[in-house]
Length: 107
Image 1 (cartoon, rainbow, N blue to C red):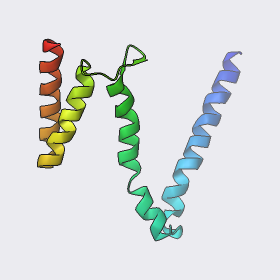
Image 2 (cartoon, rainbow, N blue to C red):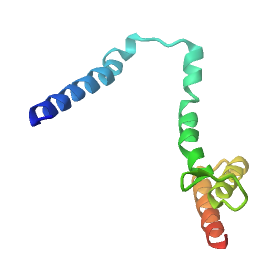
Image 3 (spheres, helix red, strand yellow):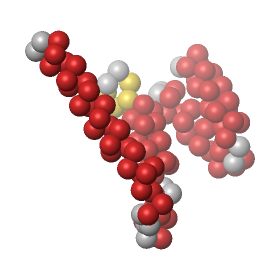
């Protein structure tokens, strides 16, 4: 693959990205989603966050590690319980990180 092919590929990728993403900005007002779909899309950020965080909590070194000696898993559970009790997001982050640090040093 020579330099010209690389530049053509980059330009085509930029154009395709701009076309697909700008459609929502240019025609977003004309598209109306059904209320059920809008309601379902409200869960997308939480689902994406869970899909990112959960694998990190249950794996260690690429292997699944679900036991009581996993400080990441225990801190995640502790942070979740803290959030359920207080509903304070910043406090949850601080409590989860403090619990993770204490467990990592203790275990």
